[in-house]
Image: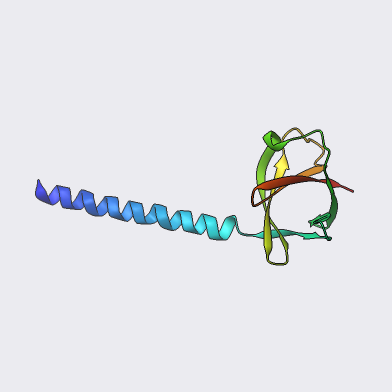
Length: 108
């Protein structure tokens, strides 16, 4: 009985370690890839996969339309999280989230 308890404890520790390592791998490798670049004095432009997007303050979408995570964009040392926009079937808009604020970019 005691031997089974020790074996179960070892198995649980190994599983917990694998979960932690998997989470670190996912956070550092997959979600940390810089896929775009933001330029301009007020972060006016986003370049993603060779396509230029311009920042728009007025769009038919809002934060509730944030879709699939696309990767990160860089502007110097700053990093921005990029998301697809739900309901944007043409792919005209990208939602960009930085710190506590978010804004949209529209394909030029």
